[in-house]
Amino acid sequence: MSTSGLFRFPARLARVCMVPWGLRFPEKPALLSLGTVVTPVQVAGKKDHPALLSLDERELEEQFVKGHGPGGQATNKTSNCVVLRHVPSGIVVKCHQTRSVDQNRKLARRILQEKVDVFYNGENSPVCKERREAEKRKQERKKRAKETLEKKKLLREQWESSRTAPGERTADSD
Amino acid sequence: MLRALLSGLGWRGGIWGCTFTSWRPHLPLARLLNVTELVNHWTAVFEKRGIPEARESSEYIVAHVLGAKTFQSLRPELWTQPLTPWQLQYIQELSSYRLQRMPVQYILGEWDFQGLSLKMVPPVFIPRWETEELVEWVLEEVTQRSRVVRAQGGPLILEVGCGSGAISLSLLSKLPQSQVIAVDKGEAAICLANENAHRLQLQDRIRIIPLDVTLEDSWAHLLPWGPVDLIVSNPPYVFHRDMEQLAPEILSYEDPVALDGGEEGMDIISHILALAPRLLKDSGSIFLEVDPRHPELVGSWLQSRPDLFLNLVTVRRDFCGRPRFLHIQRSRPQRGCPADAWPVLQPARVAG
Image (cartoon, rainbow over all chains, first blue to last red; front, side, top):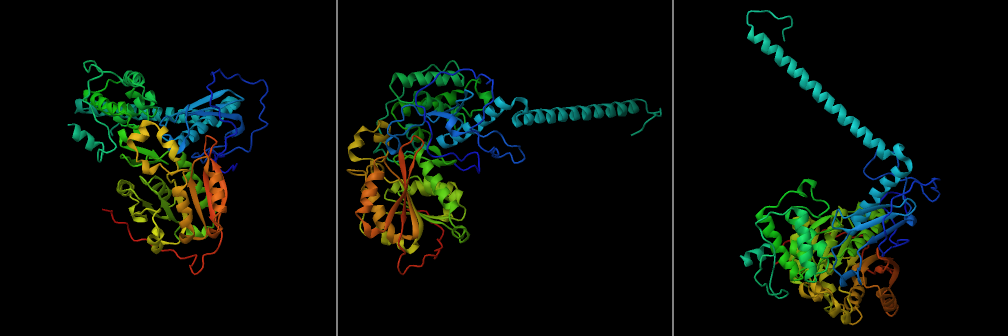
């Protein structure tokens, strides 16, 4: 399996779970055992991003297309929802964003990778950091916008007051 | 109005069709429903009539009417908004086709393949998901091969049985230097592939030719453009005896010629392999999608034809774990044919 990109997963799946399972809430493991994790992989599309914990395909169970039948030309199914479960943490991701099974599988893996990273790294996860930074930027933008608005308001008031008293000289003129 | 609706859906010819009874409204339009209620309603209607994939069908139809490709990708604000009477009516019309077992892809008139949006028209074969993996594999192989191939403006690819153009057009879009010759024996397929090529602005790099590869000497028509680096195909590979077990969606709407591969599903496959050596370059490759029983059958068939100098190199499984894709490679240098000639295709003209 190449580690050149997040989306390169082997054509052969270690396990394909075709039987529905019950969802359970993930329990935080007492011991963070990440022994089977391979070299961290860059998340695609986030070039400046520090790497997230990579997913080991052997720890994933994937379910899609219940009752797929013979497959290939003999079947025409449009239900391409992918349900992906990370066994060690119990985190499950469901993806039906696109019409392509292949794309949904990739997306599911990306989403799962982020969730698993947050699960194990908590606030230190790059996902959380990015979110905090984005929130911070948003707050700053709001603050600046507010300040600009207040400045404008102040200037307008000054201009108004200089107009209503034409003979008077004001301390600041603009 | 029915005729206008049919032509609006791109329906050509009624030979595959079914008779459309006049629709009786399934729900009172007096109260405007929101998206979720509507999906639930139609899901129930479909289930009651034994329509498979009731929920998925309902979701795709509703999403389509609201301008989204999938239900999950609908803008959140649309979830609780009431629908307009026009939208409700359109959904009802599309759903009536689903009640007639029309495949969703034909109802919507379009479908996605490898991220490309393709027009879909009965009876032209609807691309299956597995075939996206075939394209992925070809892309992997081409990327891994000599940089020389790409530098010279290749690869040159032949697709046999192009249907709507899914494989050819997705390869062209992912390999900006590539060129494709796409053939199909079906007139409707040639038409549709051309239309899709134009829609995607790829018409300059593809030549779409009506051709039946099972006819003797058909390969001769392709010589002017050869030799090619790759042959790709998702040929009709269903075993003839399995045809009658196919779902009504397939049997009533898709061209059986695009599916039926003969007694052991090998008819078209064997013709492709037989003509390959005349058209393939030195060490050129053939990539096929097949039935899971074919790897063994193809293996033995190739052994019985040592004159072709073709080797089954790799069998690859699909995401359901079934052996689905074959990589066959040509192993002997072609005499008297320059291996590095790159024919330049003239811009394709719209056929017919």
